[in-house]
Image 1 (cartoon, rainbow, N blue to C red):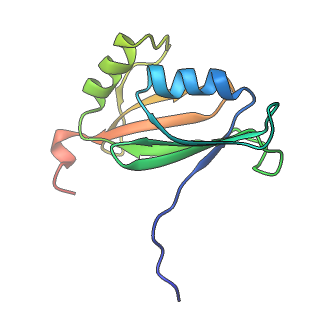
Image 2: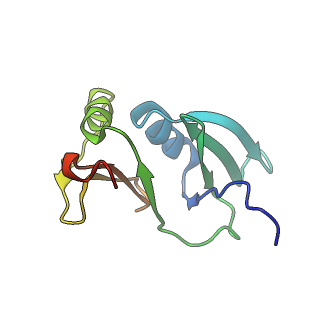
Length: 126
């Protein structure tokens, strides 16, 4: 069997400009590449945060959405504070989950959800 090099989630979005504003300006992702099939689109964009990738697509063949992606981080509260400082208007704040994670859920305008989580201190050794 071939070795898996990496797995990259693809989120279906309806408006690439609005999505890039949210993912890059508010959440802090970097735009790595942007492929546009024609001046009117569709578009396919590669984003990254600390070397980890997420792709956004307006191509019809890339699913119907919405998608949920889990992102493990070392400090969800610090990450969330950065989101808020960059303009996130969110109804959910980080919460402690019974499965040992502290999580915050962020949803884009297309309903795609990013779940950011860090281990609670009593579960840090797991």
